[in-house]
Length: 343
Image (cartoon, rainbow, N blue to C red; front, side):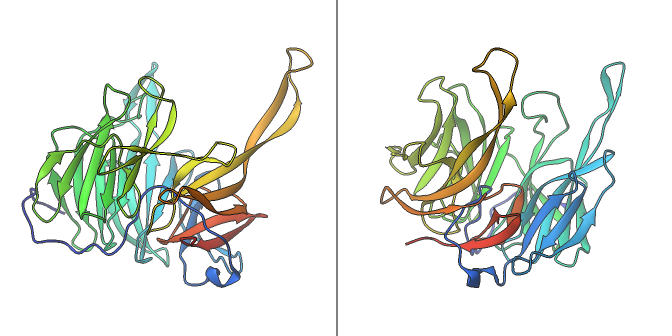
């Protein structure tokens, strides 16, 4: 593997907008075609490829738990590759790790063939929109907090099997690759109950701090999401206009709670609706009870027009990955493909 320092480069073509959050739209039978869907199953032991039209699943890759497990599966924008984090279990002696848990990033093609393994202790990653490049955050495991100590940010080229280190002034815990301005954004928690966000502009190589308080950008780049613990503002999610910094209204939580941005275009949010199932009575008097919360449905909220543009039943599960602009919804035990945006 080759490693070169970051430098100014020609403008790179970005074809789409893909972010970590999932989304949902109204379902149609015709929308089940030409989509790649993958999920981690079997107690985090296997990645399976799902055929939404038939419900059939085919194993692409597997490990042997509890020594190893899989998490955070993501489909490349082109649908050519699937990436997943594979964690090797650490070892504890006298209540102290003498061998830390270790991550590696496994890149597969759609047949399950291993294209590449990135042995970099990867903790966060995101696909670039031309699909053969990734932005990575690496660092060793650490108990508590984010469960790792940020070490480096790398731009990784799958085709060339090469890394470009990026020297940000901070050690970030989050990363996105934003299509709306051809930039990589990173963030870390700041003291004012938000994120400190920095930007690498790919066409110039310039690195600068931004005024943004979050980096979950809408596909158009007009808005971003930030979450507050209540230290300095109302607890929960906030939608902020990226250019002006003004907050935009969110619907009442009776409509649903924020899951993330929808689709690969526009400014529509996915809201999920939960329902608590009563499992039994708990010790503590006649009013005490045991229950579990399940996602029962979703709504799509258009931030620009401030209206709910669609609703549906089913769970837009975060554990399932799909091609950009395509969202997997679990309904009746089956994975269905939903497309948008909703007009």
